[in-house]
Image (cartoon, rainbow, N blue to C red; front, side, top):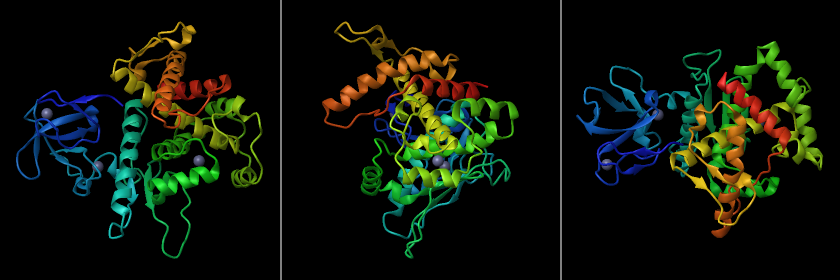
Length: 350
Ligand SMILES: [Zn+2]
Ligand SMILES: [Zn+2]
Ligand SMILES: [Zn+2]
């Protein structure tokens, strides 16, 4: 994520801020500029950009719930911003905890959309493009106990609201023996399934190159998943996959690797935004020295990015351990996974 600053007073801002803590000006994210704008209130509804006062905006309709700080330019009749247009079903807000949980989902979803926009990937809502668009269902298990199955189906991504409850999500993580389970991880993983359809499915050439790296996806998906949950993953999975889950089926491998690509590119952008440099005081191997001086979204050579990723994860894992926290990045990336990531980088650059 990039760094934002108040255009009125220079204060450091976070992506989710709605008001500058120092000068009190209103803030809103304008997706066409991928920037947080500092705003002057014209009336209850309309605002102008402090730097370009002729440009007027209002907030996305979801700002009334505190779940969105994105802007809509005033001549537009849209009710929702680019990110909230993607919602098909939101939780029943009359139920306890649903608003808090929905807010957590929206933070993760907006961060995902930011990255997709920066990558220049095709992104439209099913409401506008029924055939190729994307929408989200945020579902809570109903009182009858009907299970919510998370996943992607032809542009519809279902996320279980219970995943926004930290206690429940961590319990599930323990049960499944996963080293990492986060909301943003779910959004990144599921978006991978959607973009497989958009970027690969209809191109014979791309299908072929996909199969060379990830395997034949035409094997039965349901059976493969059942098999995964019945048997243990192969002991040497770490040499070819980014996670044990990725061994279940080529589509899972793709979605898990896609999620890691988004983890890497977003985190490297944060390192770049802060002007990070890593130079251990002890003379260690050369590959632990790194200078985060390029915006990863414009770097063409994936090797450059992966060389920067290793020292960053070692450094931040060490910081996490100093604070008694579990590792920030509890994964090892094998050379064959780098190849898969490189393939995804090439697709996104294309
Ligand atoms: Zn300010
Ligand atoms: Zn919105
Ligand atoms: Zn999946």
